[in-house]
Length: 492
Image 1 (cartoon, rainbow, N blue to C red):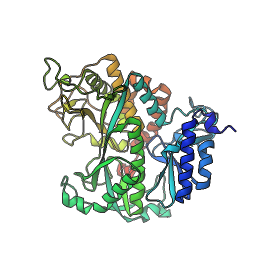
Image 2: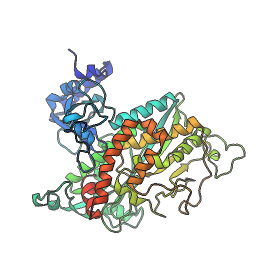
Image 3: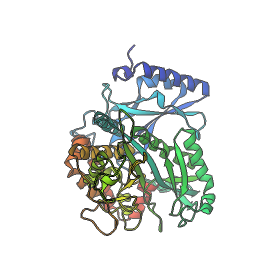
Image 4: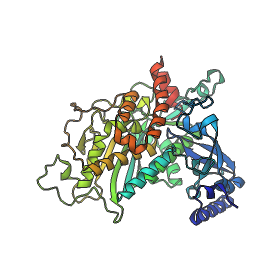
């Protein structure tokens, strides 16, 4: 008998073995429900929950999902008029809110530590004829990783994620039917620490309960958590993870955000990964992405060099980075403006780019300089030599963020671009500034021919249409704070 997974061409012997193992785990563990989860364009997880007895068959036959879930903006409004003739131009298979099928990866199975008797599987969408949905952002990163592999490299990524945790004081504003709206309000909250005392042990002790929940949740899911810290801003914290390959890092980020929010919510806390929560005197949160290339054959760090390039000065890339590393760095600089919308995709995130705020403003790199957009870390002979991109916001879709790094860096390698000298004054102005709004970032992406070609014009047009919907509603909002509260704080 041919199942849908066979028709998609993915059900080989290894997948069948993984499915059988997962089915045994589900049966032996007393799990009653299994969630089939998928990451949408905005980095949020969606999906369906099946009774445990139906899970194994669903991993073969798929789980139906309305296709408009790929067409939603951040408010959950469909950005395409799918019920009108020509309402989904360039998107065959999405007309009339037709069905897609989610196929789960059996090897991704986990039992959720915060939800009793509940399992979880990572899934991706397919068209009913067995063709992959190319707009799925995980596939976008998979294509980028394959391109990098053909060039002889893999990408290693370490995650450093700032976010905010608040104590929920009252859920009534969020759940009051008289105040329901689209999108709705978040809960009334108070802080878990007062802030402005960086790495304070006392503040960390004050925030111990929610941080322990984050710790136990991440570790129970097998995520490679390294540390949890109190950040500078009120109620702001940071989580740091070990480096992994790019696809695993992106998967881990998706799961971590979703899991932390759900586990904390059950304990009476509200976690938000939006950049700037809608309160006075907060500090913006960033997602600092540490990255290095590894040689696909030897596994060696392709950014590391043994000795400085002959005649190089300390402020030159060749003093620290290999030739490949400098080309990659130069590619990230070349496409800095074009990639911004992948790294900072919300209207909220652009309030972070302020002077002397440990956030970038200009297209610059520095040697261990936290004010620069790109921070080169390491030294000759240091196997941990890497580049830290400091432009990201924690609400970014991880698959798109990482794919933009690969495509930009590869363009630098292929064209053998060279980097300018490092900056010692990241806030003193530069020839090229980062976009200061979502609209400007979208324009910069369309002006970047290499990134458009790498992602493909159909995907760029699709992304732009959905992000323009968000941009227009933000620009037309009379109360910007209320927009941030409803659009981001209650949902991301």
